[in-house]
Image (cartoon, rainbow, N blue to C red):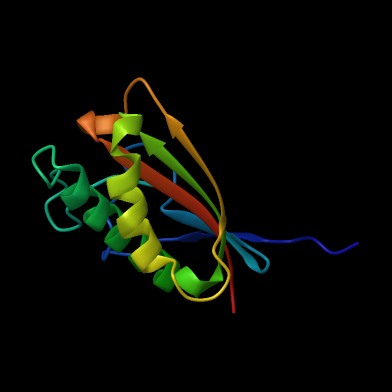
Length: 132
């Protein structure tokens, strides 16, 4: 029986974790990316000033950076979860999400409204991707 080794993925191109977790963990041919919110990778400050579209752009940029660092890409994402502070933002977030995940097979996805997100974020997205 073979054992799959888990390896932390860390990149300065995405925000440092705000808790005891990694930006992503690579296990075999899968990459499990932690949720990203709209933090500036250099300063750690929230961007967007409450504008869900600006936040979503930063979230997707952060997620793409983690995917790249883990040896994957948006085209290799197989599953996402989108967390929204207000489900009324769904159409705006979905339009920007579609830009990143427009080529190839769109990932399976869940989208849920939550009571609150870290640092007052309006959107958070995590994913699972293939590696290689």
